[in-house]
Length: 303
Image (cartoon, rainbow, N blue to C red):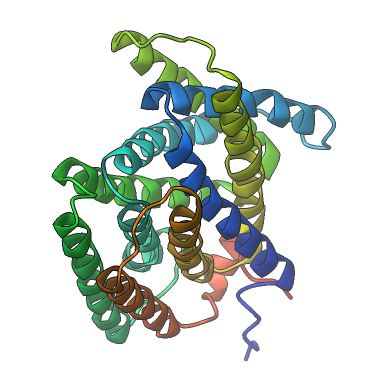
């Protein structure tokens, strides 16, 4: 009988945690931008390309995974447009709380993709998390800081991001983190640039303040944050890494209250607590080790 091995490594947990903190900061930086949203996304991707090119050029893996990363790039481009636009029409708290529900989607779809199992208790606690999101959305709507389009885009973003996350998880079995991010970012930039052209956006170089924010967004959360989480994928169970991402709304909401002057009232805090608590409890009812078939196929389990 084989002894179950851990479904994560210490380095995987640390990397996923670091990426989560950077993503929370990124949500605040987006709120501080003033350029049209497609231009913000385009420059965030464009600035990241030369950084990733240098990492790819000096790295040991110079592969070009066009097929896998191309699909990932399309999904990521759609995610960026939905996510960034939602932040313009809603509060950071609402958008990131919906984003944090990713583990629920991963739990439902992960069995087919990675062989990870779920339990009835997992879905029961998932319902609690969704109820918490409803409290938060209603509280934000009553204060006039969110809109129907913002909430709708946040939901769209949840599903598109989950698809991207699973695609990344699947590809990382055979593709390096830097080649994946390099090609994916190029494809996403082309997609966003095309949409910006079709919608007749002006590609004006932003002013110094805006360019500084966009550069910080591209290098920090955009490049380093995504590298850390992508690098961690083969070293951590998908459900575990998804659970860590629940911390994004906490970082984002605190940062938005401090730097973007967004309200975070008692009802907001109550909804966030219920949502995060429900999602965290749902993760506790996912079997920690992945099955050996998934471990052999996707390299999730470390000795």
